[in-house]
Length: 430
Ligand SMILES: [Zn+2]
Ligand SMILES: [Zn+2]
Image (cartoon, rainbow, N blue to C red; front, side, top):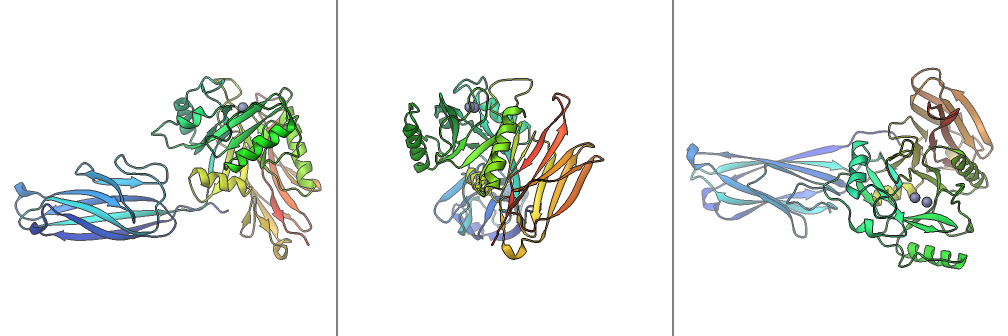
């Protein structure tokens, strides 16, 4: 889980085009390697002969199945990524295999011309992506349009948002275009006895109305069958806690809903009990933002997910693996746990379980409290004495898990408040 720069690989091609090839299509084949996330293609044409007879060579690209995009003579370069591409090109998966740059040799001088192409392949690589898993819009009781939500997340430097409007999926059919923010399909299944988020599918249910627990089981079953991940929301809230059975078939629990407070503290305490009992339960958070507010704001808390793919599937897969850290805002501070090659959400094999866990804390302020928890409860508490980063080591021998918290004194909060919660790193026991 070490922070790495994205690996980029560049290929260059040259092709001399004869005058006799004028008015024909030319293919310059190239291999699309495995695990490429994004390509950038640029080309230049050098004409031979007299200036007035310059070459006109159009460009496009095909993948192993079909033409993937065409810009004619309008552009010298283009990008194709998983979610975004230059207009005229189709974003999406870059399937490995034989691809080709396409040219239309519209005009070629008598002396011919030379086309030079540079293709930059950016490989998938693990990294932290950040965003908000619980927000609302005008599609339920929020005041933000989908475009406003996306623009705010973009301005915060966030990678993803789930717009989880209450008991509707119309927001999932109206995502704004032209935003770099990933739209994670979401619906907040809102009942009179508790709320839960269905994430990852656009239409997780046909009817939200329930009157007894067997109905809830059925909604969960259908949502799951359609591919949704299920989060129990603000379980220990004063107004709308989870009053249905906790034995329902859910995936994750929201322990941090909006500004830190007693309800979140109770959910955190409950989660710690679950972990201590031997359960592996992924904790997530979300702002639950509805409208402009002094305290409830987008990406507060901010959910960080370690994943090798900047796609909706990549984010959900990262959460599923427990590779999740929550911070009070997108600006950190940040905490990471590493034991050898294993990180947050991973299980360290028994043979390596007496290794030191390296706890890396970044962007601290003097007075921040760092707390490490295992199934035994609070293991260690340290206070940061200056601004910056701190590295702690912890011997995790005979522990089942370790997780970190950072507490900070915020001026708007009374006393210390949560700044960071990590999910645990787990240790195999025998
Ligand atoms: Zn709710
Ligand atoms: Zn909500």
